[in-house]
Amino acid sequence: MAIGRFFNWRSATLIGAMLFACFFLTGCYVVPVSESGYVAEAPPPPRQDVGYVAEAPPPPRQEVIVAKPGPRYVWLPGYWTWQNRWVWTSGYWARRPHPRAVWVEGHWRPHRGGYMWVPGHWR
Image 1: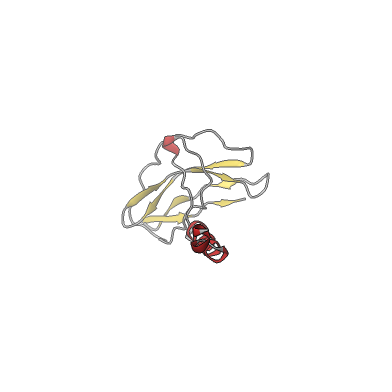
Image 2: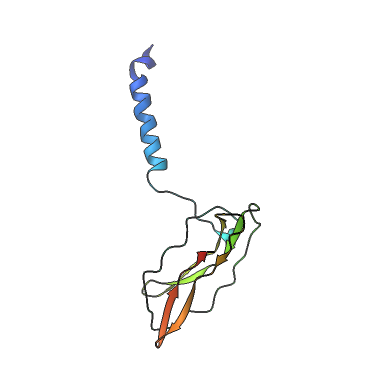
């Protein structure tokens, strides 16, 4: 009976709402770490808001591509982003939006003495 005094239907609802908020409303997601062999679906690659960079990006890094998690998955290779310096964004497995979808890789294109980011997209 002592437990019933402190734990009632209202407190159970409040605890459930708090757990829901913690896990589902905080925007948490699992980012894949291909070097360790862990595979998870990740959010789409971040947009490159930098339109122009004066220096060339470094050569692409060698990535370890782990086992494909399913038939509708495609490997989206890693790429360099500019954040006041070059930062590598690792590749990951992504689910195709439809069975015949093809990923067109994003890339840095030479442009007027510098480089411009052309984002990747599904075709």
